[in-house]
Length: 79
Image (cartoon, rainbow, N blue to C red):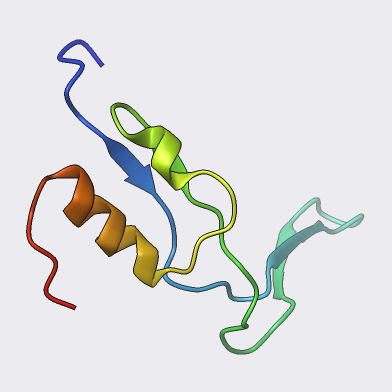
């Protein structure tokens, strides 16, 4: 943040359907339950901060992330 020249991206490669934590009424212990047993096709979020962050707004195909970074860095696309 102090430098002002760093783009930070946070995302995931896939969604897994969620995790639920349920606290037991007896003993107060939490139990973890997964609501899916494998990856799903659901979209995942991407969070961007810094120069160029506006290029990662809205709905993007995951392959557009690398293409957008290539463009922002002024590199040649080889796709």
